Length: 264
Image 1 (tube, rainbow, N blue to C red):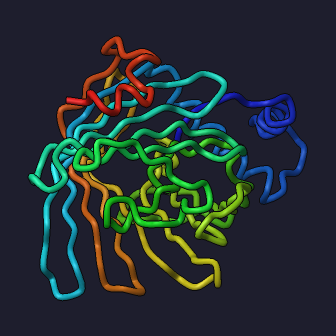
Image 2 (cartoon, rainbow, N blue to C red):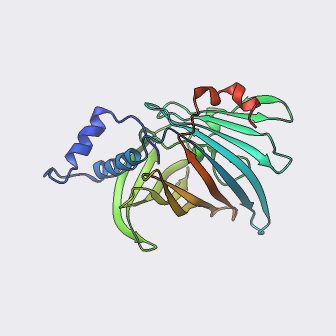
Image 3 (cartoon, one colour):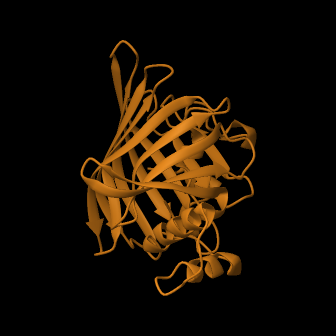
């Protein structure tokens, strides 16, 4: 879960949920307050780089592996900017993907295909489509701004020995592939432990689980592994992360359409 601006109404909700408050909280207020706290915990990282291995597995168990570098730029007052650069295998080498995340207005996303030497803009209506053949949709890899969803607290639950809040969130943006997502949020660190996705027919679609969290700069938690399982197709995608670096000096000029073409 990521950052961003919190408007006056959200702040009012947060204040109403402070321990000294005697006001009753609705499930919607509590769900929103949990999301705001998770967002706040991840503010201020500036920028980051990391390496990622993407392993795709089909229903028969056959696998293919891709090696990717990720760059992220925190944008105060809006969604983050990110770039994914594919290094291996040879058939995807040089492919680069750029995302400008936003709150409610459509995310902007571009894909550079080196074989064609052209930049292709991803249609905002295609956010539910698979990212590079994986079980992650385009909308899954954009930063998750608070305003992208409405929220509802469901219950407390212990998940694999971890005390969590379980909240439901409903996409507030157009063209989502989901009706709702159920999120298990670590009570102590306010980081996601698991997300269950329901498709447009409100049928169970896939489950994302996070593992091997590491803390950076004494504040920012990042999972070394993310496993997305598609229950309808039997396919899965595993993302394995390493070599995280923060505050590396990236700027806007590193995240424009021209930078896609020269991504190395």
